[in-house]
Length: 104
Image 1 (tube, one colour):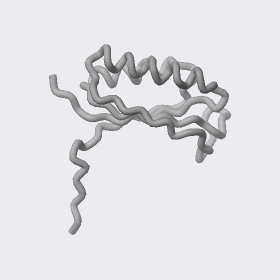
Image 2: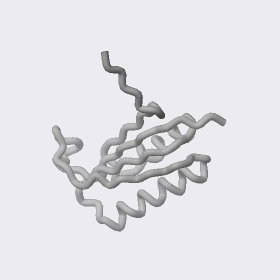
Image 3: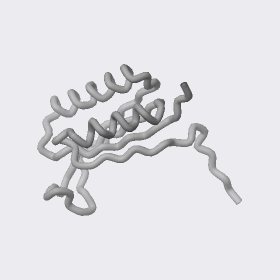
Image 4: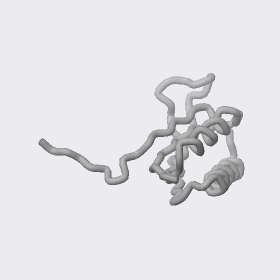
């Protein structure tokens, strides 16, 4: 099975407590590990003001996860986030492993 590098950022409602935030992070880390993901790195980006309101929220708590997984795991993770009432937005991108930059 070929694993690609992914980055998922999700935004939590501003009224989510720290305990709920840590619980969600641990649940998603556990889910990624169970489905065969590797090298999971979680960064809490903190509360930030949103550029525009999302479902009547002007602030959100940002969490970034970097990991290696296959496409079906990403689909499953995003479906789980879609049905979580504490997450107001999420985005997953596939990252370039070597982060190459071309200067001309």
